[in-house]
Length: 244
Ligand SMILES: [Zn+2]
Image (tube, rainbow, N blue to C red; front, side, top):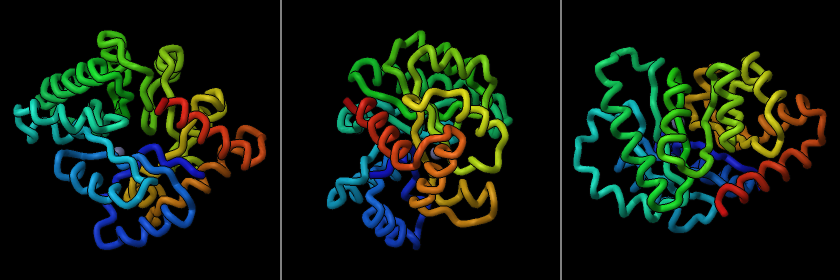
């Protein structure tokens, strides 16, 4: 069993059935992260006849302003989600600072819900790593999954101390920072992710399918100097531990 701890199945559009076949054939247990309510509902539908797909409700920070303020209806989605995400903050790609207060308010709502219902979160932290760390502590939520971390090393260490798990994504082999993260993080805190088809496209121009997690496992095994099977098994164990 492989783990894709952060994917966006709605991004595959007309290639979705190919992606689902790949998930099935390679036994890739997949967290289908939502960008918003609509993408959650479609992920939930896909999970009906596919136990490898775990739908997760969240609203991406880039959608914080447009999702309105009627958040009460979200609670039922959060109760039924095994993991809450994608949620978080983006102070890097989103340059319009006027959006930041709305992002923070929405994230605090989700963290409050995560605490209330004992859920693990799947967090986007781009350019806001310090703020995320402070909010995790403020809400004392369960140790989350940090998706595609690219922030400062000292904050990474603090997140590690908090108990966070870190996904290793499609830029492994292309990013010096990601290689350094893999080398310094303990194996029992690592997960693999693809982040949908467009993440790999952003890295090297290739359309990314879920079986790219195998390439990531291979990359981790080289950096950690461990057999691929061991890395694959450990990542599965980490994922099981999170969902307990
Ligand atoms: Zn994502």
